[in-house]
Image (cartoon, rainbow, N blue to C red; front, side):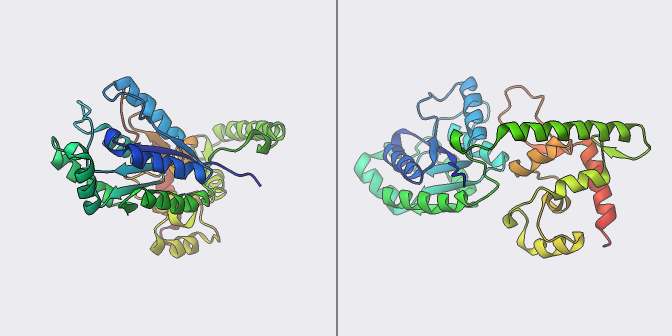
Length: 308
């Protein structure tokens, strides 16, 4: 059995949270996973933000440590770099969690280290950001022991998710030669199928028929928490399936909020979604929308199953 290691991007303000950040890194390592972070970079450089985005994209999990400071402000957005990192992780639909300092613990930190651990320049921005963070998965901490415990508990849950790819040792890898042969054969079959469809009168979606594309999406299973609980049984009954899959997600997801990166990126492979910011230089966000083929397929799917 392959033992995967998840890469965890650790985000926080730096000077005021050195001990807390080190505790999180130690906990991630002791869980057998890989910490990543950009604390060695100096905030304020636009090209640096692009590097940070790539590191976040290459990570499996995003961890925010939120103390009493908001952090350095990025001039264009008016947000701190920590806030921008958080927003980017959310835009990718990444699994994320935050550990947030308790008010009493912050008071004790002020007594110990002085007011440098407080946000004195932009307290309202910190308050607003804290409110956003508290609307998602959060654990509170009084000291570094709480941070280590939160990391251990949360990473244990994330490690069980099959949809998180992670990293594996080279000697545990799959048979790449055999996989390459299978992919080559599938590619030939796919090309032949698209050529046949191109000469027919069948409506296609990125070169695939409705039935073929539906079958492909059905073969991509999802974890139960990918779809709202109250809709799970209804959508399974509607489609007559035993296992949740990507076709269900495409059917019931609010198509104006395609924010689960691991799913919308798969849909993008079949031309059903596209990044609306793909042609915007130096952008700090990724937001998916339905492509023209995606809109046609979505309407066809609803037309077929809306009354079933």
